[in-house]
Length: 295
Image (cartoon, rainbow, N blue to C red; front, side):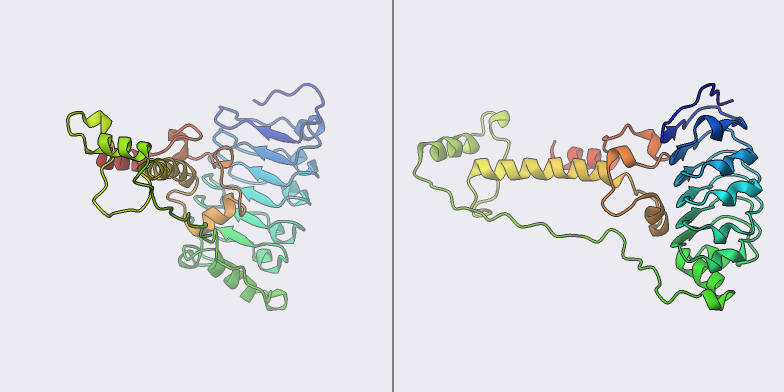
């Protein structure tokens, strides 16, 4: 049980990866100003009716629990923008879920849902919905498995008067090409250049010859070339560590968990795959690259 005995003005609560099975009825009284809650990876079977009194709540993450139902007061969360209910045992959702004023992102993947509330098609704020791996008959599960755009289109078709003209773009995380560094010709007449060339051409000690590019392969001075190669290695390690944030996630899931420009170690979603690494660590992809090219 989540033990709370005094009133607190905290705005963020993260109690992931515990064995919490019960949220006390007075939870919203003791923590009335919460705007962010992460209950992921616990054993919570239900939310108390009083949970709907968290009027400041904007983000609720409660994936990988044992939820079977949501209280009727859930729709009272008037500021709720993002909710993750994935990997639970929900068999239905509140019929008025689509009437919530601020709901934008909804994740109900991996539940026991047989249908989605048709009111979601009336929502003027909903941007993305994930509903794969359920038992849906309405919308049909094959539509749910096609992604958020297909689900939203189906739901809005059932409510044509509320059909939005603007469809959410799928252009997530656009690539931005960085500026290319200009190369500078080396000065072969300096003493430093002679020294570097002597060390590079020496075959007696491999530790003194870490880099021997092919003849005429580059116009960069050897020390600058070394710096750039080292920069590539650092870049590969950092990009692999950042890339772990979205590894094996489908585009809709990426859009659900991360806002544009928010990919970082401390914002990484905590799921079964990503908890195998500590924040900032790279994966076996970089290890294989290093072992193949740097031995």
